[in-house]
Image 1 (cartoon, rainbow, N blue to C red):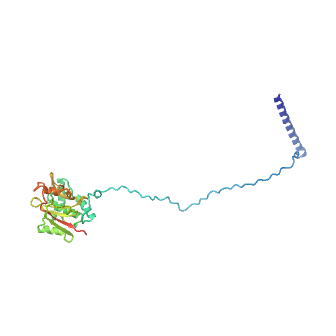
Image 2 (image 1 turned 60 degrees about the horizontal axis):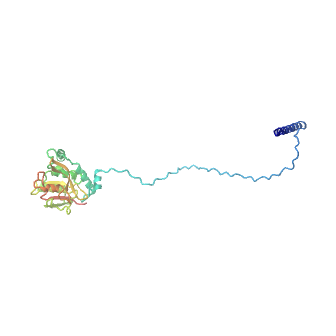
Image 3 (image 1 turned 90 degrees about the vertical axis):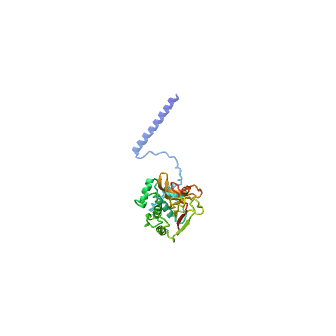
Length: 298
């Protein structure tokens, strides 16, 4: 029942509204104006609200720069690449090549390097090297000692380049020719001269050490069977002394670097070997002492 009444009321409302609209339209056609609306009283006064102007933040302006801003500079110290040391540099670093005596460091390095050019570790190679030094017909590793020592000094720049190694082959200081050659190679104004009759195995090498560049003439003495010449080519940090020289081995004579003596071990080195046995099959010398020429410091 309530639903029926609801629909009836709705229909009446719609009908009334439609009738009113038709009447308004008809009035407009007859009179020529809109149907007057009932007075609703004075219009309310509206107070305008304060208008707020929104503040807009201007976009930043970028001015292009002619000079570009440099990147930060790396101030750290670059690590250098690991250098590869030469054999000579390794010997110096380890103390196996130790600078001693009046020759400059550079002269001692050249002396050592020049000596290595004559190393020949077999009898056959030693014969070939001897011929290169002394000439065909004169090159034999059993008696190349003088020309070998002079060639090393010449190649290192200690002796003049025009020095002829062959002139010192089988040199005898007691003969006039030999004495003159030694005097020309090692003049008194530049070299100190020392002579001793003390056997090389009796020398106190702590008190009188040999140094690079020393040229020795070693006398065989009454118990020896050969005289010998050599040049000291290096010493080490323990003052052990070395020379590239010729010497006998069970397989024959060779040219090689050998330790001459160890000041802390009297049983080590060629000087001990050469004086260990009288008239040794492999050679004995040094019982008669030696003569030495040493360059003065500049």
